[in-house]
Length: 130
Length: 348
Image 1 (cartoon, helix red, strand yellow):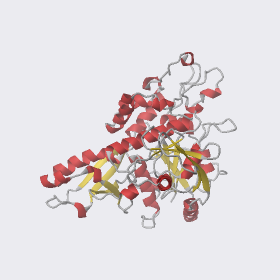
Image 2 (cartoon, one colour):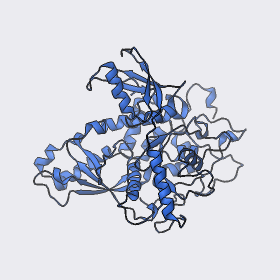
Image 3 (cartoon, rainbow over the protein chains, first blue to last red):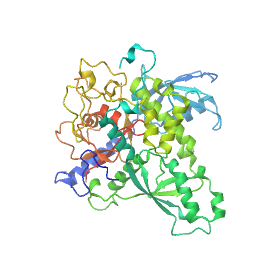
Image 4 (cartoon, rainbow over the protein chains, first blue to last red):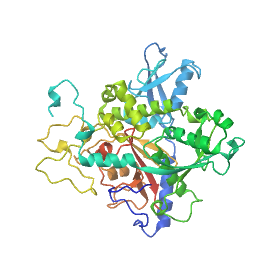
């Protein structure tokens, strides 16, 4: 990392940080904490699909989706429900506002953008808010 | 400043930001990381000048791998490949892996890729001894460049410059929506401005980028004339304008957002995202320390008065103090895509 003049209290390369002496125990505790956080959340959240423009409306619009799934899985699920193939154009948006990165999790999107207990996913055959 | 009486949106310009805000934005913009890019030896075409297929570069933290491709390509054509092989190069098939054969997410900013990988490597059992991340020499991130057969199922999107731009614009809009509950600031940009903000990233030009970004990024109100002089650069405190009854509410103020766009990266995942209000219920500013102890209390225990013994948090590769205010970070040190990426490492 380049040294940036004036950056706030950037530690020099040679300083040691004041970690406590029982480093081994701390390291173990930290690794166990990481393992705990890696565990996939099995809970499900409600996703509401809403068609935009000429996109077909599905018989069922509310689905319970595993929170740990990536948004990419939601897109694939939607394709399957609509009976569309991989090459067919499908554009998805959250709250008619933006397209999330495919590796964002449903959990993160739900926590950030859910309204009235569900996450709204709009789908369209054309790019609307791209 | 009577913007509220007019119907036109009063756009804050890059020049109306305080000197302190601009300083941190510039520091963030100019941060770089060392990369070592090596073509997969199995993919070197015949007649390549072997032994030279490694390219070292200092890449901007706020940029993206697909934007480095033209420079890498020029190097390969000049130094490594013969003419016949050069003609066969198809950048749209290029993709990157780490030394440990992990697929690199090209839509992540380069600085994030660097911090996340260096932290992950330092935790693996094969890592040398018990060196704290910050004691290690800064080493280049070693990337393997593949020239063909991108794993499109895992990559999810083709790593073309156009796809990169779309992903980037998507992140800007998501950040906009998080802050204000709508994307009006982004959608009211003219097409030329939207293209311009990406060009600023592509060309790595601070002024071009911020000319547009200033219209969508929250601001920190400058200090009042009779208040104390601005704090020294070591301190990250600013008085929230909303705490001062005489200052009109700042429409684009960093402390008035609904949520600061923040993501938390644990080594080897997961990536956590949640609402980050600028102020807490007790009226105090939401600090990084509070954010960390709320979301990952096992690593940042709430009761501890000093910094955690177990873990540390990096923002743009810098150890971030726990008293840093989330709203301030969101205005002064966002990445080019508007997001604050906090990388968590564990102390060793």
